[in-house]
Length: 389
Image 1 (cartoon, rainbow, N blue to C red):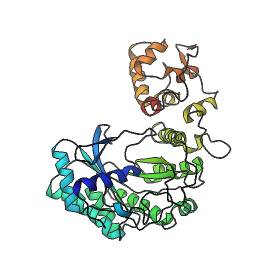
Image 2 (image 1 turned 45 degrees about the horizontal axis):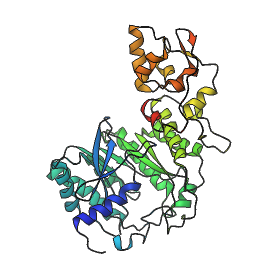
Image 3 (image 1 turned 135 degrees about the vertical axis):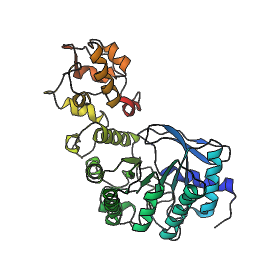
Image 4 (image 1 turned 120 degrees about the horizontal axis):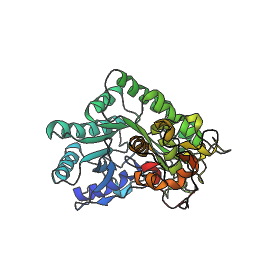
């Protein structure tokens, strides 16, 4: 392995970390480079605050041969490098003390030996917690081969942990990562659930990530697996990464997956996590995918004319969440506002933050239907749903 200086290591291993997601929501969050040459990513923390994270790999040298991965076995070549725990801990604390970062997202390729790699990730975290008394946010990736004692230590040290599932079922995972075992990874989720029931869980929960379209899985199959993790395992959230071919990998000739498919999955995920929808309520096309032309909530509403239009001034909070263009924040604002006054105009809803172009066909204001206003182009503002709809 070639010897690199600290600045070179941070550049190489920071850039390599871009494939692990920790704050995406269907819209790419810009990243910015810090003066030391490392990588800093703005991310929304579990408490809703936005903070800069040092997002980095411990190592980019991997013994796995995942067909979609830029860092699969042998790919790092002359840029193969790794941190030692003390080195990475010192780097992070230096950036933290300068006010450049508020937290750490630490992942790694499986370097030489998965147990040694996981041990070094845990050692880095332990140095930060015990030696430097760092009290802030640490998101720690758990490697698929991790044993129960490693996982238990991670739960004690990290604010949030994650295990990448990559695919919604055994056959799909084998097609893109033949050395990984779906059942073994699933047992890690069972272990997390068991620890949680015993009172041992990171305060910000656990997450997972899937590669979308690396195999031939459908959106319905993805949502079946993810909804199970939400309902039965109390998973905090999932991240979705649209497949894009990497030159030199076995899947380099496969067509890239539209980021709109990724975005629709995030929207459907929001419905499950925050809007009270059940998986069975999601509407899929004949191939089991979410139509890209219409967001999942509007599509569901259009299939239920018996429910709409809803009277905004009397509808319950849970029913307000069923109206396209109204999210949890706006629904709470509506319930507060209508205690003070009757809501009779679209302008009053716009001031609250309702996306009236989406909501108007599905609501009543003081018993009156609203003429549908001119809508924005479907592809005009991709990020709006994540905020309010």
